[in-house]
Length: 214
Image (cartoon, rainbow, N blue to C red):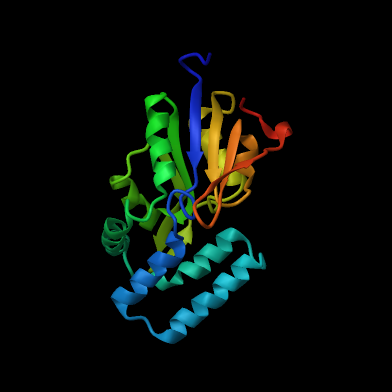
């Protein structure tokens, strides 16, 4: 049994997992609707999306370019739009089975952690509504009217590093992890699950050599 200084942790991705959509794409559409962006701007951002999926640039550079549509929108303005957006989306478009599992884990004294590659400037307002123990997202800074990634995009190994920094390398066990993508954090969990595009929960068999925190 874990002692009082060792934490049991359940990790949930947001986009395509807890949230049935992609906030990166849906928030972009919402801002386009609110700001009346022209078709040319939309086409340019679609090109960046294709480049990002093809892994032609790293995730940090991709995010900085994709989110250029937020240029000249102050953090306060983006926060206001994000609050409106999540008011519409939460909890209506969240996976009911996973939301139920979140509540079960809380009752079992498991720390529920959400980790998303989304930008803090529009993800943070979600957690004004969604009560979990902790959350991580890609940190940004607003410089010269544009958003720059502060550090690394919260993807891949960076998600594991966030947990290590928060709990301490040997101070926690990921008892469950959920994602729509077979990402590295699933390989660190005792039980790991992939979420299908239809919202179904499938078992994922992690690489046992990576169970570093068990």
